[in-house]
Image 1 (cartoon, rainbow, N blue to C red):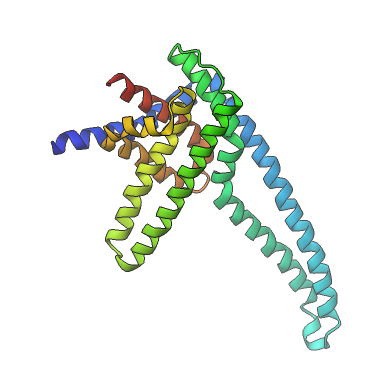
Image 2 (image 1 turned 180 degrees about the vertical axis):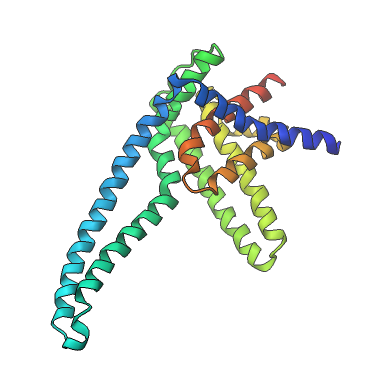
Length: 249
């Protein structure tokens, strides 16, 4: 039984590499990731440019204020102004790096749906119809509720880690791996007409496989900038996993 569990876990983990292989091997799929990446880049360049512009205005006022002080300290006016702009720029870069994954998911949402539809048609010979606005709103509501629940439980397990330094992080890893695994499968399930309850019923019969796949998703999220390159592979890996489980029913 233990060998079966390990085998299922590793099989699920490898689904991530299977999805990445499909995406990076098939150039016709790249456009679905390139467009949101360009939009995100334009948004971040604009935001960082605005931060630099506002910090330059602040630096000019700071320089004028320090220059009016006694001579023994006014000499640092130029240094303080320059440092203000540099620090603001570096902070903007740090914020950009750590928010880029979430921003990429936001910008990529509509394009990733088309990525899945293209994958379904080319690799599964399934010509899925795009969901209408009622289905889209229903899927959005279920996704938001799921994400909020995940966030609240994540906070709980993080706080538990402060009380139980050993058990807490392990439970956080297992919980987030499982929830992220479901989250990566959800887009394909929705486009295939499966409600979240139906998907979770199917996935609950293969917990170790889903946990393995979710572990890969969780580890990718921990690496700065990695999701920007590998998120499409995770989405396609989720599609591969869902179809594999559905075929076993």
